[in-house]
Image (cartoon, rainbow, N blue to C red):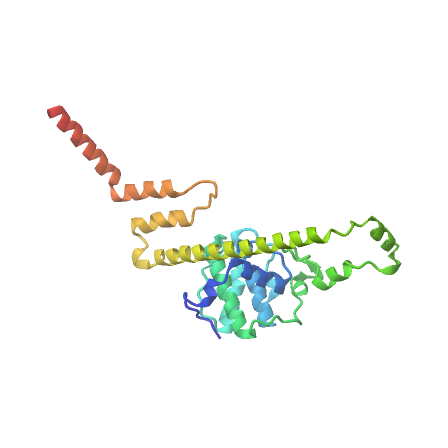
Length: 275
């Protein structure tokens, strides 16, 4: 049972898209960002699927929006960890903040742990929508109304006696020319290649940022001015404003650069006056 997974384990090189696909396929959700799992409810249900009957799902709040409700979910998760003798620390105060890096790292660990138990095979007998239900009514978790693929397939084929078959045939679009279809297929293939390259490049730089964050979390370095300045940039929440200026100002103040520059300026003025 892989409860302790080192930071250099391949688990931490799994991209966001793969993590989101893993969650959405198994729990019939439609999450688009890892931060949407910050409430802890998704993690509880993943362990419920992996260890049926261990998680008290009636205590899990899928509507949790504030930190207090989220913390209650993580308390449930901590109890499950204790039952299963999982020793990984739960950094609840960081996870409930919804920061992408923290939540992605925890979900990467969770996927690696669950895969080590079930070999990465989905439990076909598990009904995630039903397990999220309370008193027979499904709770409002994002994407929980997702239509199963089998129903989507069936809905694409109207019943013969529906009276709409003739209408759909008559009013449907004409078949596209073969050349146009080939051109569209080629364009689609090119876009797929571009997307794959961009995702690899993004993951490459993300791993570097993650390495910097881990280095900054070293207790002996935590209070160094340069480390604090780097953290200001890493944890900045305003996407429209650069945190570089704020970090530089903090660093200059901490190192006394501005005071030294002022002192040098005053000395130069004094020398000019004496000359």
